[in-house]
Length: 335
Length: 220
Ligand SMILES: Nc1ncnc2c1ncn2[C@@H]1O[C@H](COP(=O)(O)OP(=O)(O)O)[C@@H](O)[C@H]1O
Ligand SMILES: [Mg+2]
Image (tube, rainbow over all chains, first blue to last red; front, top):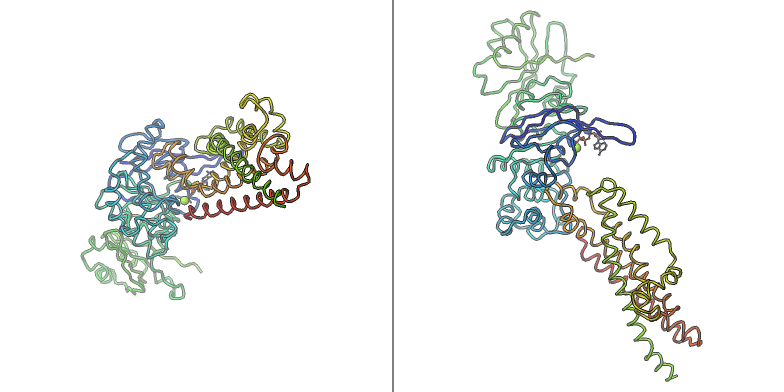
């Protein structure tokens, strides 16, 4: 659906050249909600703005439904942009147009007649029928973003780009906007690219994720894979930001004990693995903390377990768990 | 005393109409010519939606030259041009030519400043929707900048009232001419004071009108 191939973007400020995006390749399938997460300045916005060429990539190609947007003429580009919706952190609504007139804007651009019916349909979709004649300044942040979404969908795009769409909103509103995006993805089949610096957003709606740092993608895959088994330090940091963690004072470490974070997808684990491991390898397991995460439509179990016993036995138990689709991560507290 | 009042009633209403006529027509001309220049200044600048540095520099230079003429000198300097356009350099209609020419670069800068206030993000959103440059100018830039434009036009009108009085001193019509010929040259103090009061009231009213309209259409 969208193939980003070796995209780079350099900015030249005065005399310096600065690489904001470095050789990024990402493939996004139809119907994906693809998350791109990274700290501020990682290059996420620059990358996503290359997709509709608000930013001209310095190198590389981007294919949307097989058509190379980096190679098309201005006229073709405008036609393609009509099929790529975009929503923004600060909404960017026209202040002097009502909700209705804002949604009409892209329809005017495309010379579409019978705008009224389409606008009514869109207002229903984003649940703003009662705000039809309000001005943006009369709306809350969440309502403004709903107008932004309706406007972005007016021309029936196949792709929706969301650049920090919920970053200016409170947690409750964020949740409702994410629910709406999910509904749009499910019911209209719109492929989405979701830029965020919050793991919570990825967790709630994305099925795939790429982690960016310093202009590069350092890790990508399904959200479950990346979430349960992060390999890059930045990814680990993001995962930790939403996981239940143990206060350090809780821990008495000695050589006969090992602290392990265990995660498992509930549908892939059907045996009482932990008790089996304990019996088989003659170790003790002290569960310090447990929790459940909802990742998209999957349920992930999380445990922090303190194993005690012979060193080899502990290793054996961990191996045994790993062989059975359980992800184990040693927790080291160096103090 | 009755004679003095009669004279005023004979002179002032006509002079007022002449002033309004000069100011209105030259504002109109300046808007028609100055607005496109202001738009070009904004869209052609670096990072603008239709970047064109050399065009930007040409327009900017012309505007600066236009604005560096004091109005009194401009008025005299373009007398041949005024004659060419209206056939004479005297009278109310003739005064419209220098007034318009003085107001064009002023309006260009006023429009430029108002358009620059439009949030870049809104323009970008329109680009992302596939809008052409012309669509962005007509549907985004100008409507969004309208409150600022109204205030800018108000400023232009008030400036032109001042200039039109100056034009009255050298053959133009309007309140300036009355103040000069009757108030100054014939020591008719009541007329002098009346024209000043009329000008002050006029300026106040226009400023009030401009502020009211700008506020009403500002939806921020
Ligand atoms: N127009 C620009 N000119 C120069 N540098 C830029 C420009 N846009 C972005 N950058 C730089 O590129 C880097 C990545 O920015 P951005 O893509 O906005 O990051 P993110 O969205 O991940 O926070 C930042 O260091 C930023 O300063
Ligand atoms: Mg960003």
